[in-house]
Length: 310
Image (cartoon, rainbow, N blue to C red):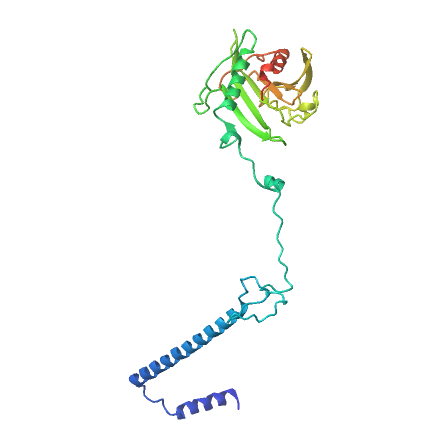
């Protein structure tokens, strides 16, 4: 028999079959209600049976909370001799392990140290630390030789630039023993009597514990970082000021940074940097014809003990 013959035979059977009996809606509804009642009765019996089984199993698995070696079962009798080991829900092949509590060093390493003095960030805007950078600015102005004056000026055509005479005190880091390292920054416009133009003086004190120049002396201390002089093609000189050695870095020419800076490092690692430039960049003011100070005058300010701060 091929596919066509099979299809024809099936059609003949369907035609020859008697039609289904007519649907009686009332009878169908009664049959459905009876079936629903039978299902509910069956579920009730099954749930009751499961409850009995659960109670029996629970009675066997509940341990003796009174501290005995056996396992308490229903009726108060022990189903395990006193010498038998207590039952456990952990398979014998599984061993529970606990990690040791973290040491104080681990806790210290995993917790970032907060900003000091309740600050919200690195910068101190009020209090003793903020006052120190203001003192640096005032002392810098009072240390200038005759004919050179620190002044307060505004940027020309730059209302959003703010005052050109500024200070900032900022937290740098903690030493290994918890000492706070701070940076006190001050910068100001300067003028020279009888000449036109506005120059720039910049000063920063980095307190004890800083690692900027480490234990390197002489010009070696600034080879890695000559900032605020950013021209790496300049020269380095060692100037003597009252028996103290001051490193002076001079840029090769005008560039986007300070033209000259004097570095003095105290034995306790406190670092004083004072820098100068003929022009106050981005101020809109014309530059001085020459630097505000000589190299020797700049170095003398760097070793002044009033800038040895903590």
